[in-house]
Structures are given as C-alpha cells and as structure tokens.
Image 1 (spheres, rainbow, N blue to C red):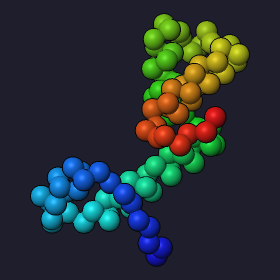
Image 2 (cartoon, helix red, strand yellow; image 1 turned 90 degrees about the horizontal axis):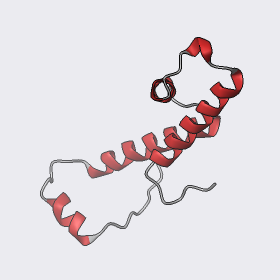
Image 3 (tube, rainbow, N blue to C red; image 1 turned 120 degrees about the vertical axis):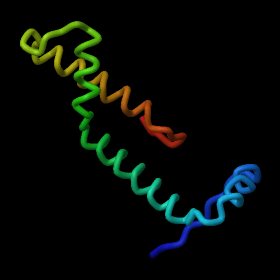
Length: 93
C-alpha cells in the first residue's frame, strides 16, 4: 500500500482526537475510494436514473411523450447537476 500525507486544519484535528477509537486512515481510505468511484462514473457519463426521473417529474413529462432530443437534454442537465454535486475544488471542465 502507498502512504500519503494529508494536511487538515488544527480545529479538525482537535475534534478528531476526541474519537481515538476511530481508525481515521480507514475513514479517509473509504472516502477517497468513494470519490474516485463517483469521478469514474461521471467520466463514463452515467447519471443515476433517479436523478433523471426527478428532472422528468419536475417538468411534468411522461416518458412516452419525450423525444430523443428532449431525453438527451434532460440527461445532460442531470449529468451537470451530478457533477456540481460532487464536493471538489479540483473539478476541471
């Protein structure tokens, strides 16, 4: 396994020390793995169907009435919303 060093604010460190039973390296490892998984999903252009259905409901559209162009428009909007939802300061676009 590779080691990395992470800088955190002093205040956060003090709060973390209160919970000495927590394996913080495991917490960080899981958070990083989850974040990379979400980035990979976004790279593939996959948006959760729940988000797409939510956008369709907001627009009062029945799936049978949706043209391919409109479906692609909603798909792209959902993808953009999901991308914005990812909490990152390193998003490149």
